[in-house]
Length: 91
Image: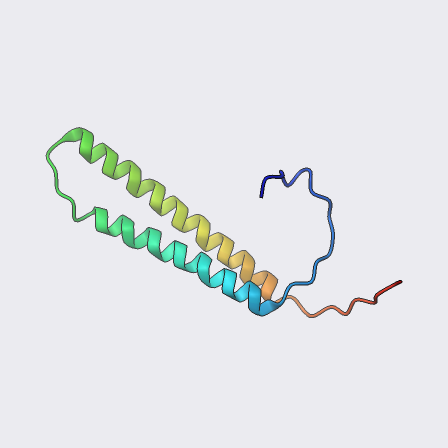
C-alpha cells in the first residue's frame, strides 16, 4: 500500500472471515519460515569474526520478523473472532 495510515480515511469494509483466516495462515507461515531460517543459520560454523557478525545480525532480523508476524497473527485472530455485524444499505 503506497498511502500512509495517517492519510487513509476510516471506513467500514466487508471482509469474509475465511479470507482473513487465509491471510492469517500466510502470516503464520512467514513467522515459521523466519524461525526456521534463523535456526538453519546456527548450523553455519565459521572462525571469521566478520562472518559471525553477519550471521548474528541476520538471525536477529529473522527472529524480530518472526515475532512481528506472530503479533500480526494475534491481531488477525482478534479480527476474525469479532461478531458479525448487520449493515443496513441506504440508497
